[in-house]
Length: 376
Ligand code: BMA
Image (cartoon, rainbow, N blue to C red):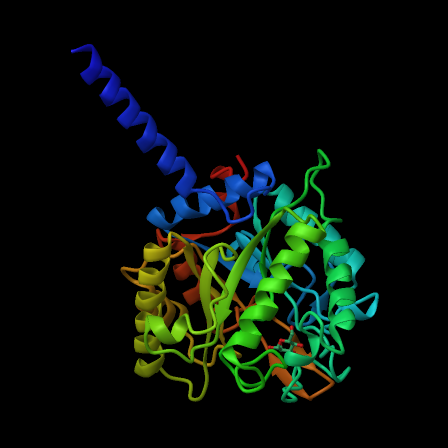
């Protein structure tokens, strides 16, 4: 009798332990808040997904740097639950990023979002360390040239030092580090960035990703990061999705980016692809015990006014993933004379549809996210 009780108790303990272990990020030294965020994002998926917006607090269509403002808030009365920010330019020691957001302001916006209980994700369209040109310079050999021991390795390492400094400068009110979903080397299956699939071999890319995580985590001791593996839409099965995956010990979130282009109509191919890609990454995440997410998405200028309910929500039906991030409301860009925005602003034709999307039970914006206590 006694031994069977003991057996039962130890079984229970093992079960509880393994449940707890399952909810841990790959960085064994991750801060308390980072560990909590990871576990909570896993739980969130059971009920819905966080909705995010890139550069949400810095600017929107026809406005810039107005304290407290956000296009999503203008339309819904609520902030997004996830805030995307971009570090491109920081590696050069610049005061502002490649989209003209000053890093000092960005730090404050990050603190604001975190204080409200929101989540932060960061991308990095970094300068090509090999050529000194932009991120969009897929010169062959760029990755090989910066690997440990190669001619431009020190340039990349110095870039990472700047990244580490910024990430370690993000602090909450008690001095705790703000957790960040960090997605370096994103859209890695595409051919447009210097780290892309067209300009590096699978092994070179994996080595670069492994080095990047290990340098930030083990050398720079940055322990407020969850690492996001982030492809483009160039995959048809798990094997293709995972071709450049650097390893289970380095990745916490598996994700992809997706954009609708073309005509102002419902595009069944876009919906089907999104649905299919989610099915693939959800299976990968389940098998590897990771978190699935959509790292970036949008339909620039939202020319179809029911896009959010009839395309996005439709494709997302029945899926379980932690978050999605709509890309930035840049508005008119004098540089290339184009206009770009991905969520409606007040008065836009798709604003009523976005409110319907906001009201869906699965979509989580700031007010709901705050109640979830994602850092506890
Ligand atoms: C792109 C566009 C660019 C921007 C870049 C990095 O998709 O929005 O205007 O510079 O992202 O944020």
